[in-house]
Image 1 (cartoon, rainbow, N blue to C red):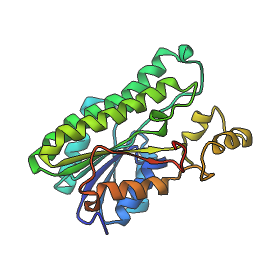
Image 2 (cartoon, rainbow, N blue to C red):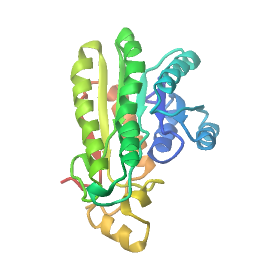
Image 3 (tube, one colour):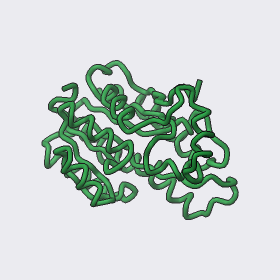
Image 4 (cartoon, rainbow, N blue to C red):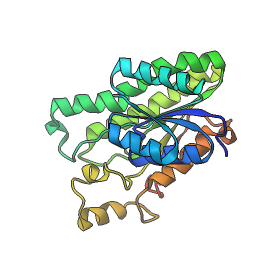
Length: 246
């Protein structure tokens, strides 16, 4: 019960890595708000775990404020903010990505972290404790070709995490990130440009441990980084990648 008594928000908690984090956090004693724009999935995960669901669009400022306010209202506290929601794009030459897709990547992968931090940080500073965990990617460390703008957004997350950690450390707030390799989530087919035995074999060949990451892998890593066991860890972007970035 490493998160006993903690109150957490997990954005994009209705599927994929976010669902894995919600399930692990609840199992470890946390009260969790599953924040997702997919109402059906948010409610499914909440019903299965005992968490609470909230339908929000993390790229909308008013929704970010409502998300944080709702967590504090329902739980009486906010200890952990997991900025997990993210979007990708199909592999393609960098000059061919449509502008509206680029704008969506910026809004969800980057701006949403700013909006959530703007809403949550004053509360975390006031209580002089808390953890913010941002979902980055191996794409921000070892980028694959034809995914340039997704790669760039995740590089931004890593830099933002490090800068946030330095700025918030005097207030007792830790900021960390996870860099997962491609995982068994709904986004996998997007990254690979289709889910076929051939594309899977190509991706797996770049992962020394020989498998994709799973929601459980990310839940376990997130639980450690957000627990008091990691009290001396801030500013890291921990790879959960089966050795891909070696």
